[in-house]
Structure formats: C-alpha cells, structure tokens
Length: 356
Image (cartoon, rainbow, N blue to C red; front, side):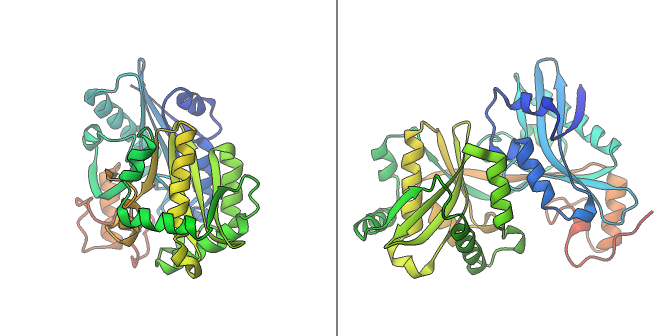
C-alpha cells in the first residue's frame, strides 16, 4: 500500500477527483478555505491523504493543525461539511481496512495524535471498512430529495402543510429566483447571521462576507445564490452548491417579518425544480443543528421522506500521546472512550495542554 500526504496545490488531488463522484467538500480549494478559518496559531494546513494499491485508491481531505503548546503534536480534522473518504476502483472491505491502517501509520509519522472525520451521508453509505481503524458514531439523520423522481412525485412527497404554505406564498406575490449577478450578496449575509443567532447556533457557524466572497472564488459556477422577493424586499436568501449531480443546501437566512409569506419553503421548492431541470440527481438538505432532531430537521423533513445517517469517524492515531494529552487536560475522562467529545484534549474548559 502506497500512501501520500499532499497539499492543495498537488495536481494528483484534482486528478483523483476528475472522473469520480465527489462533492464541494472534497475540492482542494474548499479545503484550503476551511483551513484558513481555523485558529492561525495552530498553523492549519489543507491536505489530502491518498492510499493506493494497484488500481484501487482512497482519498481523504483533511485539515492538519498543531495541538496548541503540545510539543510538536498535531491532529487532523475534516473541513466544514461532509467531506468523507472517496474511493476509486473496486474498494472491497479488505482494501478499505488496509488503506485505513496504512493512513494511520502515515499520519503517525507526521506526529498526528488523532483524526476526526465527518462522513458524507450520500457518498459514504457503507462505513464498515472505516470501523476497522477507529470508532463510528451515529449523530442523527439528514434529509435528501431524489431529483430523478417526477415533478408530481416530488410535490406529493412534500408534507401537506408545506404544500399549502408554498401555494400561499405564490398567491401572495412572493417570487423566488437565482441571483446570477449576486446583487443581494450582502443582504444574504445579514439574513444568515440574524437567522443563526435566532437559532442559537455556535459562533463558528457565523460565516461572514469574506467567506462568501472566498467561496465564490473557489466554487465559481458551482455556487448559486437564490433569493425570495416580497414586494421589493428580500425575505429569504440561500446558498446552494452543485457538483457531480449533488446539490447541497449550504447556508440560508430569512427575515421573520415575512414569516407569513413562507419564503424559505418557496425558495427550497423553487431550487428543487431548477436543479431537477438541470438534470441533477439529488438535493441534500442536511439535518438539524448539531444533527439533532429539532425544528430545523423537521422543517427539512417536510420536503422528502428520504433519510440518510450522519456519522463521524474517530481514530486515535497515537494512543500513548492521546492518553497523555487527555489525562492532562481532563483527568476524569476515559481516553479509551471515543464516543463522546473527540478528541478529549480539545473539549472546552480544559486544563492547559502540557508540552513535553
């Protein structure tokens, strides 16, 4: 098994993606953008680890960063979103297990202590091979829409309450459209921030104007801004990505003053129709906050009955160093338990991380 650890400028990364299904989260530029949002003192690096055995290969995008004041130790984490591993060839369970084992060895050589990966609900349906090298944790369900179904079937799969409110929005004069010129970019950012604060979202989810501009530069035509106009005012706006037939509901916000016009429901119904016409295969709406079965999840669930589990993959790469860091920062915690907050040494309210 040959294993390479490459940066976002390596041609082999883009070549790997060139003829297989992938999502925006696997793109080198997207991983680099996510790395730039990490704490700069931790020297985050956008990397991909690639394991090969003949015509079979596995690619995993990562952000590798310093463990603060930890004497040279580092750890690895997925970029924001669902950037699970990708495979080429015929990746049976034996290959995946061998590839994971080889990747762990390679990361240990780079002084990486732990690995935390968010898997892709659509592209990583089978995670048995990953479990051979770590712990799989189930977090909840996400919602997706089968865009290959007929328009009638999509409408019938929509909850009756959603259908009534979408029709009411249309009758009220609300209009959804793709803002191809990005004229309402700043309004989107304002609506998104206000919405996230109403939902009580963590501060790390408050992406600003600089992020949106950088995302546009990275994704180009893969990124779309949809807005809903009500009497000349923007009542809702959302970012949607489109890659390899996969549409992602990335970020959105709405103005509560227009709640009775149901602009977000209209927006999702409109984008669903547009992307179906573009011959995309699936529209992934995601789940609730922190993958919870909450009001956000139930809102999304009203558009489809299709569900996929969202999982994370946790690997202790260097058990001795991981136990040392975990016991020093949280002496009450069990380093052998990877099902809770992971890695333990990054759990909030910790003692200072010791240096060697």
